[in-house]
Each structure stands twice: as structure tokens, then as C-alpha cells.
Image (cartoon, rainbow over all chains, first blue to last red; front, side, top):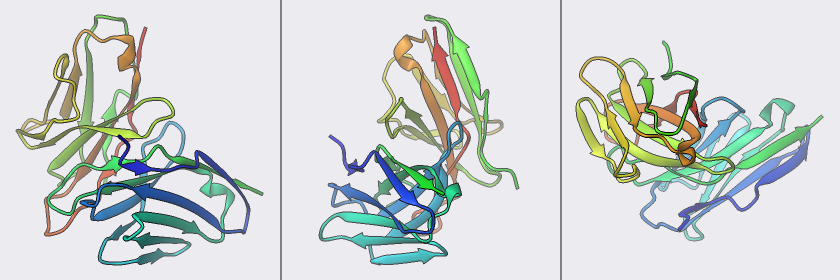
Length: 113
Length: 116
């Protein structure tokens, strides 16, 4: 039973264009959502997060949108750069205590120069 | 300010041997999590520890696996009598003391375990 789903295993985008990575979740108890970026042979690196009390959080080229009624969130990267090529993981957790993260399977983003 | 350290980065064991994976959290972080990633999969939670206490081990197999986070020293994930299915990347993450809201977890580079 996958509580966090990333239905696109891969995505290719031209340099300079927008990358949109999507994530759906099923557990209505999730209250906090994070995106991590992972390069091969490295650990995941925290990118950006959003609390369920917000519908948007922006940090430089990265923006996360949350649609709580649809249980859907998306990560927008604009403009996309070749260095953004990596696997992006969506993760979710409850808002009480330091609860473990539940991860999606990841989306491999390739930014083509 | 060093990040999460894990060693070894690569570990090869034969079936039936023991594997010990070490994790040193970010200085000042008192919460440690272990996750496992199988090929083409996302990270799956195994165990959550604070200093000297296991808080949540619901994701860890009941047999052969154990974890500790002693008062002094790194957190250890121990796998006894390894089998081929234990081959995976094992990631440790740490977060600071709870400050009234959810804290971001910061990950180490992982230990890649290969069981021959």
C-alpha cells in the first residue's frame, strides 16, 4: 500500500524550461511534505518543504504547490538547468513529533542542454 | 559543521555473515533514523532512535536486524546472518531536538551493502 505516489518514473526537459514533478498521497494524516534531490551514490539532499497550512512555498528557482483537497503536490523548477538532473523524491509525514518520512519511488529528471 | 557521516560507504558480505553500519548524526542532532532503499524503489523507513532509546522500530524486520544509538558514539544498524535480499543502500538521517514543529531530516551518503 503506497501512501506516497510519484507516477512518472522519468521526465526530460529542455534547459531553461520549466520542470514540473508531481506527487500524490493517500493518507489524510500527512501534514508536512518535503522534496529531496538525489544524485547517484549520494544521500538525498533536502530541497524544499511545505506545511499543510500553506498552499505554496517558494525558494529561488524551486516552488512547491500543495492542493490538500486533491491530496496532490507538485515541485516546479524554473528555469531548469543541467545540474538539476537527478532523482527527485517526494516525502510526507505527520505533524506530531519527529515522525518518520514516507517516500515516493522518485522521478528521474533529465535536463537537456 | 559536518553533515551526517556514514561508514563504511560500501560493504560486501557473504551470506551468513554479520553487517555493521555506522552513522554519526549532525553535531547537536539527537534524533536518528535509518532507511533502506532497494533498487528502483523509494526509501523505506526502518527505525527511529533518540539517544539510548528506540522510539519506533515498526519498519525494521523482527529477526536479524537491530539498532542502537548509545550515549556516546555513533548509531549502529546491525544485520546478523545476512541474506542476498539484504543487499540495498542503507541511509541514516538525523534531525535536531523537536522545536515545536516538524524538523527536516538530513541524510548521510549511505552504505551500500552487497551480499554475495
